[in-house]
Length: 248
Image 1 (spheres, rainbow, N blue to C red):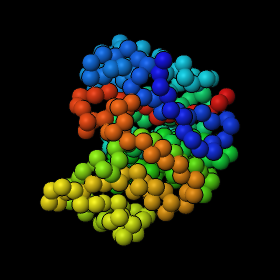
Image 2: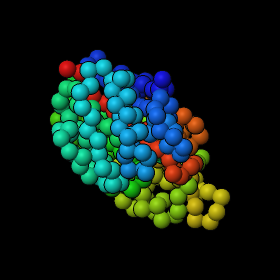
Image 3: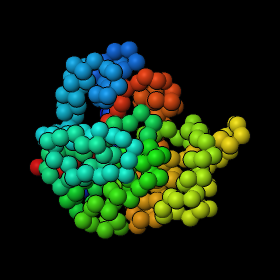
Image 4: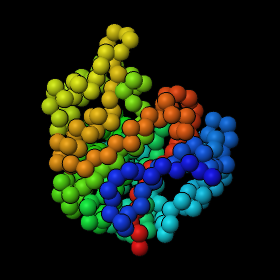
């Protein structure tokens, strides 16, 4: 039985969203047990079975739009017929889930208040910096003020150390928040020119700047919580999924 997490947010009644954990699958070793990533050298038959089992937790789900994630700002309209290179997907089709795979990067799920469109975005620091969340919000027909966002499990500030060049890049070109707000998301690390980055905090600030007011943060750390795969804690490792879809 999988340990599945459901977002605590005020989503419309016709929308379902969830986040998986490591438990509930058939993978072994470093990928034990509910690995849903097909790009991490796990047994393809195990991944196939894990993805089949995922449907058990998703009533009235017919398809999942998987992505070939490349840490980009690219957003696609989900159609379920291919696996495009992108880091976010949006759809208005019922029964078709938008999904992202993570193991420290930030998964963000979106829905408009009317429940007409849903989206999922994969926000590592590169994609976040380059605008994957901005592009996802802009892909909605509804204005940003009518959107809800959920920030899933990711590596949190005490564990996420980056170089000074990453901090500098966010200060120079991260859209939305003020320089002072961006600086507040980086605290000095244990070594020179190292900083601990608040990835979820940066995402929330940008979403707020775009006009979102309904932002729910899971507060879960993929590094500290053994229920999740964490690339920085143990590599190789599997991937867990965050997905959202509209009921028929």
